[in-house]
Length: 395
Image (tube, rainbow, N blue to C red; front, side, top):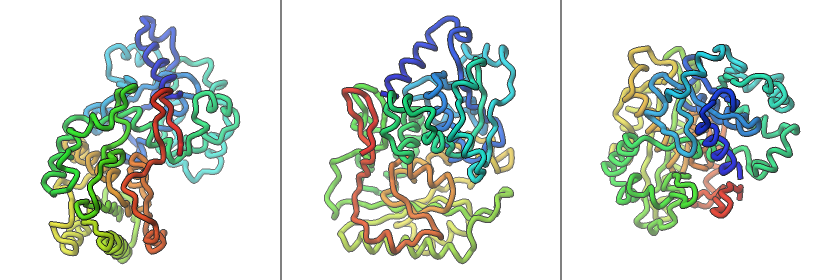
């Protein structure tokens, strides 16, 4: 219900001539100081959650390190802030933020604010609200009793918070064709089984007839998977050591070995079951990448041969590069496609698991051994679409 409801609200708002007078807007604005890719996407999902509950038209103002629509294009709603018809919004209203809530995940008072605040009441006198978030505050809004009835009417009450991020992401975004081509090339070069039906070729297979949208990536929804002896299990490894770009240290040097040990345990598990295994690595550390190549070999390890950058923390010359931004998002999307995810505590890895609706092993705090007893299932169907009503349900 929420999809159909909000698409109609958003489309009707954008077809009216008196855009400002007839509608209320929520603008997610991220020019700087918003965090990395995972942080920013959490902020956008939180913004969509607020827009849904307060009946506002969501627009996304995300120009750095490149316009977001050059990387992730609008899917079901036209959120592009750069469209000429929205320029009047910039001139007609002050540019100060209503909420500029950065790195507040551990702030008990802020969490309680999102669990208790009446946004509809506080927003009623302003046509345009400008917000910036970088944490999963939608999770706490999902617990806000003031919106129980609204959530019930929209069908949001039936969604687990874990599923909200993935559903909202696919509702808002579809990868630019350049990114799909990059993913296709990587799959073909590394002789992955599902590269015979590449991402670009598989899109129609996962397209909802009603919504005309890519609702999830092919590896998650393709039920015609080959038998184990022909199947390649892809184990995703995301290691963020920190220490670059004034980023605080995330893990100790000796903890990197825990990731390798866990990856090898998973490999042995799946090889015993008859699967071929490959690894996909994304990391912020060139030494870690070289170590992985030496350990697993180039035939087993897939990694991108692109500069290591952070979309917020890298130097201006590195960061202001469309190709580097594309590579970062391609790594993110491929990580979401992996059958198993071994990740560092980082919103990059955690949100990638959520858009793929995947479980994850978070090291070094999780016990890798405890995951080895889980039976393998290449399809994680946490949610499905009722095509009659266009409703996401949590299974």
